[in-house]
Amino acid sequence: MTTADPATIARQAAEAIREFNHLTFPNSPTKPGLTYPGEAYDAIGALKTLAQRLPQAVEQIGTALDVLGTNDHLGSAIGEDPARHVALVQEFLSTAMNCACGLTQCLELAHSEASPLLYTGPEDGPEEEPCGEGMCQCYCVGTGHPCGCDCPHDDDCDFCDARDQY
Image (tube, rainbow, N blue to C red; front, side, top):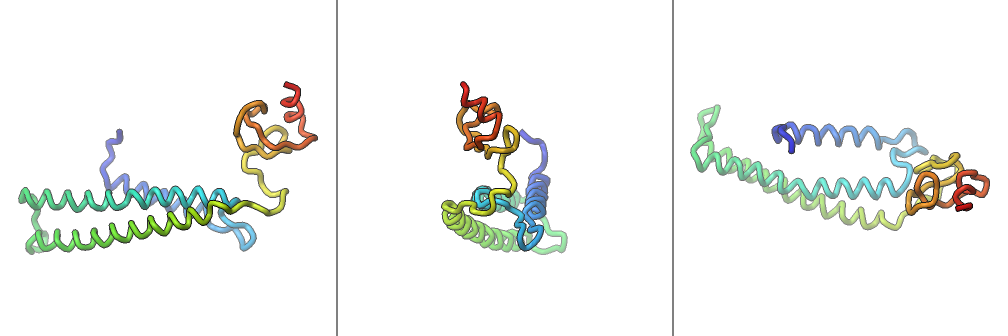
């Protein structure tokens, strides 16, 4: 359990998105920020999860203001009725929740459409998970390979040959 306040957590989430934006920024027209379609699929899925959680977070802010107002614990720094400000905050938060729901739906559709995509670029591209002597593509599924995977392998790879002996 964390002892940080909610605003700190929200700032950390914003910082994480900023870092995501830097990591996925295209290096050039021929070098995208994401190398494989699976990376895009995973990223869309993670953003969808984030978007799914936003409505609850936004709603709970509004609920907190309602409780504070009901208990007569709100004032206004400019001398106005705090209930008017709470009503406007609630209106904008409601709109934000609807936008987050729409964002979630769009990301769900994008996630589904990204699902069948696969990489067909040059084989000399970077490996997702290099293993052995760097001659085979590791998918880290199953057992038997020195790194614990059961990957497609190159006939010239000594590590793969050693696996085949067992």
